[in-house]
Length: 542
Image (cartoon, one colour):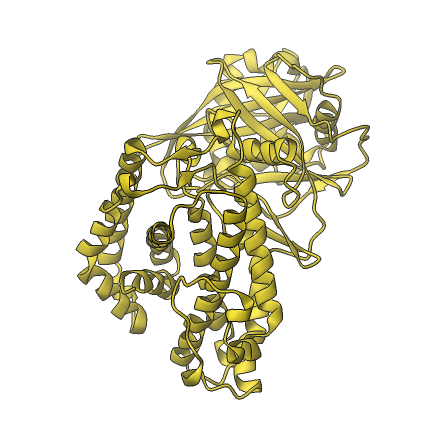
């Protein structure tokens, strides 16, 4: 990339006689800054979500000062326009540094300001910036009415800054760890509204005192030129943990599948359970307990309990309209069907173009999917709100094992941003709570198959037999989860509707999720497409 050579060079690309404080009022500077140099920088960032589209140009939609005691940084809202005729907004804080040895990888532009040579860099690389932001939140006053609004929770008291570091490799955001106790997440992709992660975190912590999510401590919001409130940062407690539930589940499943040989278990004689049948631990066949062990099922039960408690908290609000439960209605039905049919058509096109990439069971299931496409489409259209008695609530929206932390045999739920492909409005639509349950069920299904794929050489059984054992285990895991979850929610009077309605909604959401996953797998790792295809097959043949 020839363009990028200019970033590494130290010769100033722009010279300003004005001070740093007024630099962004200089149109000539803004033009140079937004040119090829910034494009080249952004394309290399992990948080940049437009890599599959062609960047056309970048505009500066908004800028504001992040400052304290005369120390000034700029926050930029960049509008990235694409050749495909759409745009995205990103948040980029910038700083000016003169130290030649500093931030060599994160330099955006060599520049000279009032005869001082230096670089414009992403400000998160500077400890002084990280400290300033922390102190602005820690000392925030109630009823902040300025353009950049810092908010502090009552739970965040008398905290002084000690240290800060990056949290590590993230995809879409940048998280900073303070004092090894608190996490400030900077949202990089910005929407013209409050971020659901901020809304849900604050609501669950402050209003409902839900214990199994990181405590909300503070936030940074920007009131833009159109008076829209935009979330830029979210401060939460850091939960010391043993990793996420996805890794935990993979380790547990490897033990379970190793037991097939160790305990000389005949897969053909394993008793099966009815799909989506509610189970208790006492109701699980002894042979299954002997094979998989009690620990796995106890953990599934705990996770079901925490999920139910989260939904009970989200469904028990009667003042704040953003969180009050709602019934199904015609508007929701129209919204849902439009969304589903668009997504289904998109996945259908992908699968028709990808058949040559598939073999064995995946190819058979793909043909079944195409043969039954009309009946699958009909299932999506057959959503009749007038027959549904349950309630819709704000939900997690992107609930899977990777969004759950494990600590001392308990689970903590995080990342309430919602489904990455959805618009900000769609993420805030009240949905049946069973949509989250379906997300977790698909995640269990994935974990079972991922374990088989990752360890196939370590097991004696054929892949086909392992798939068979996996499907049996999946029925017991989801059955126990459902039994625990439904009992908990019913005891708390969260209205999920009658039994048939619950199964209808669960299957509808599972089908939606599996069809959604299919596009991702066919595009990025076709050998895993068998997982969503098997999920779809389970539902349409049940």
